[in-house]
Image (tube, rainbow, N blue to C red; front, side, top):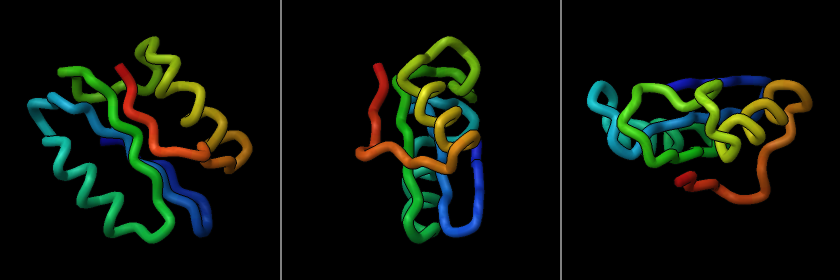
Length: 77
């Protein structure tokens, strides 16, 4: 699970089939952080950011660079 934090904004990324950190943990983290966003990706790997998943990389990079959250909670293929 990857977490990016700026004042008042939190984002978590979780793989749907991550063998090390179950997706349910990402869901729980997102619920525990007010105003947070969960990006779900259909992968078995432990991380998705920076692995060529444009559906993950674009919103995470936009968030890290400009503190702009996507308008919806993405579920990436």
